[in-house]
Image (tube, rainbow, N blue to C red; front, side, top):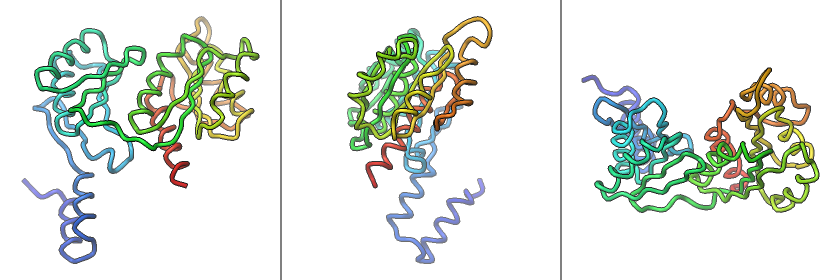
Length: 258
C-alpha cells in the first residue's frame, strides 16, 4: 500500500527539525481514521482539526449497523454523539453499549444518544442562549443544545416566546443577557430570529423549523424569511439543529478566549 502523502510530508518535516515531536504527534492524531468493518470510517481527528466532535447520523442505518458504529466510536474516542435516533435504534445501541461496558446518556427530546466510556465532556466553552418561537420548535432546539453542551458550553434556554405574542419575548431574554451567542429556532413565517437580532448585540443564528403547512410550509417560508432579514443574522438549513449548535459553540469558545 503506498504511503499516505500527507503523513509522509509530516514525518519529513519532523525529521528535518521543522516541527517538534509534540506538534507532529498532534497533527498525526488529527489525521486519524478508524474503520468499522466495511460499514464506516470514523474520523477520530475531527475534534482536533475542526474543534467539533465527530457525530454519527442515525438516519439511513439499520439498528445493528448504528450500534456497531456507535460502540466502536465510543471505545476509540471516549465519547460518541449519535443524532436523529429512532426508538428501535436506541434500544440496539443501549444493548450493545451495555455489553461493551459503555454508558449511554439519552436526550429523548433531541433524538440524541451520547455513548461514552465514562469520561466527562469538556467545559469552559462559553455560554449559548437558545430560544424558540413555539413548543413545536423544541426538538430542533434541543438538538442544538445537546451539541453545544457536548462541545463544552453552558446553555440557557427560553422556549415558546414567539412573535405571535411579542410580550412573551422581553422577560424571557432577561435571563439570557450574559450569553455570547444566540440560536433562535422558528417555524411558520420564521420572524423571531430577526426580532432577537434587532434587540441584542450578540451574534444570532436562525434555524428555520419544518412546522407550518400549505403554501411554503414545512419550513420553506421560515427559511426565506430569515434569509431576507434586515437584521444581521446567520441562517442554517431547515431543522439543522446540529449545525446551529456546533456553530454557536465555536463562536462562544472564541468569546471566552478573547
